[in-house]
Amino acid sequence: MKRTATAHWEGDLKAGKGNLSTQSTVLSKSQYSFNTRFAEGIGTNPEELLAAAHAGCFTMAVSMILGQAGFTASSLDTEAAVTLEGLAITGVHLTITGKVPNISKEQFAEITKTAEKNCLISKVLSIPISSEAILL
Image (cartoon, rainbow, N blue to C red):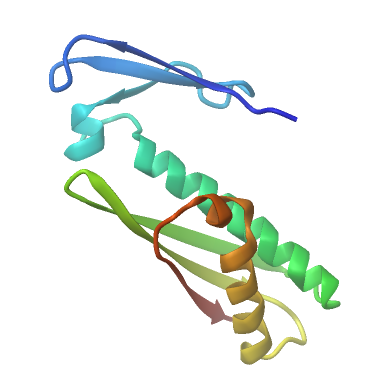
């Protein structure tokens, strides 16, 4: 299986603009620019997309590991915070809030730590990754 995305750019770095599209068409010529990456503006940026990919991958990994342990989540909500310092991505912090019947806080925390290390996006990143588990 291969997944694809495309980027188009016009102009110089600061005044230029571009768009991103994905094979699934969920992103279809979605705007990105210097301002949406390093300041504020309407549009996306690579770091935000990395955060979305990591949050999605991690949450699915937690769901899988919960299932392997005999648990089914009522809900799982994850925020991935990608830290950009200068021109370097220096870390990702994952905060997951879950409603999981019949699980202890310790079991939930252990499962999320396993997912933190083993989700596919975590495995390809060579930066510090941390996580926090909140069981409701």
